[in-house]
Length: 124
Length: 114
Image (cartoon, rainbow over all chains, first blue to last red; front, top):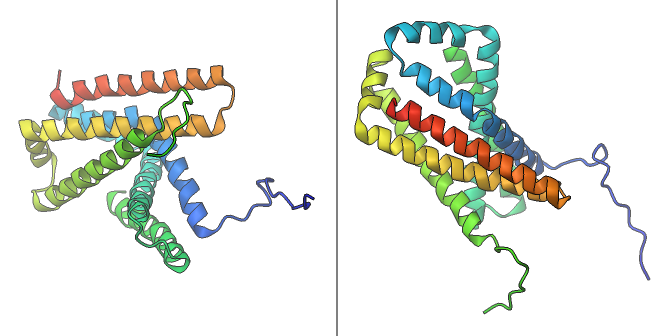
């Protein structure tokens, strides 16, 4: 006898809990960082170039569109790092209780967003 | 010992550990870099002086290698989760490896100023 259970694999019907949101954002930010690797290495190279090249590098980085992309990546890095620390703690069985896990998930979202706003605001 | 089935693949424990170990390496490097940034005089000169040191270059390159290994495990997991046709999946694995090795070569140039 098999019970007919509803299967909610329709993505638009699934309401992810906060830890689930943190998890999928961890994955999405990881993919974004993966595709940005050449850009990130280029940024390091520009920051270490000779004084003349440094000026043209600064002009590139000062472009508002580039700045927006960089702030997006800053959030990606901060979220990936904060969520990563949370996952490492979960791996060693810290914070497994439902209430704690929800609270730390909210903390990850809050910390990465506010740090992005603060650092992004300072660097703009 | 657990009765392990032969499935023609690794079980992934090594990769799981590599992903965690490299994550810790990157966190330590990031924390150290932030401390240096806060402590050193701001601006181009201090930054260039810092990255002129051989030991900073060595630790930066080591951390970047940790980053590439970390990305390899993460992106490989992604293809394993979402791409079912074997041919497509192996192609994505290969492209990922090419992308990461290229990034590694580029990072060698940038870190060591070749």
